Image (tube, rainbow, N blue to C red; front, side):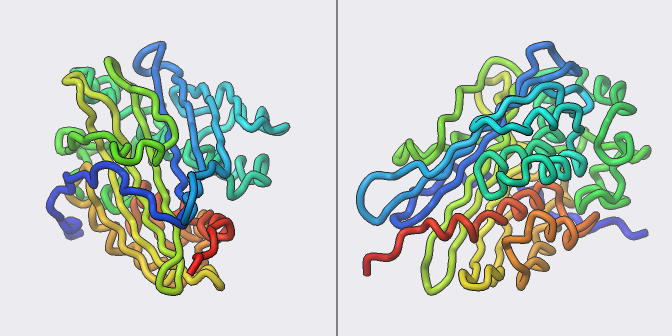
Length: 339
């Protein structure tokens, strides 16, 4: 078959979060990964999320918070879990492996949390755990050899074979080795700065300092407001971590802008910007994301997976879009325009 289309590398961060708008709601979430026992061992994932209302006048108000602490096995199986606010059924997630299984288990076990910050970070466990180990490439010279040794344990693709699971791994892509595994030699990453805007320090929930060792962070921001008779959305997403040089490196970053009809919940327009991606083929997924236009945003957690499937989509852009499913319910909490 013909090789997939090659695009210029996406290697430019959007920088810190924009200033919050009066009359808006901002959801921020983060999942931090730490390996206290070293590479290839169980690790700790700490999720945090917050919904913040910025009124037209007055001080911002926290609408809701959510947190989790998960100890996960090298094959991304939940070994221990604690959530806040507490939930009577949270321990039923122990033993669940990340991916489609964890999303189904989450819906079946903790489905009553849908729409909350806690549900968002728990839903993001699947994608964050898939990517987190990449940060070791910044710190360990023999990372590729270690990854190869662990390939048969991989829960990504087909035991580490990634052919045709997404746009970036389309058969014939520069991202793939001959055996169908990821070719890390051709992988790019970009140095990035802080996500917190110095002119708006409360625009993010507390993000612990990460430095001095391999640590990973998946961070997400969704801003919602009304303008021009529709709901406006500005969403940012980044996978990053500290490097030995004392700065931060990102492997994924997207920015997405959307307009939604508030009455029907229909997506009216979408612009997905691929800012930082690891392989030349990856940006192609952003052009296909427009297939979601005309669909019900509230159903995006499943509809995105059904529409942007396989080589049509990007695992991480899909996660950006799936997170928009909570926008219609959050919009009901927006303040009325005083004018």
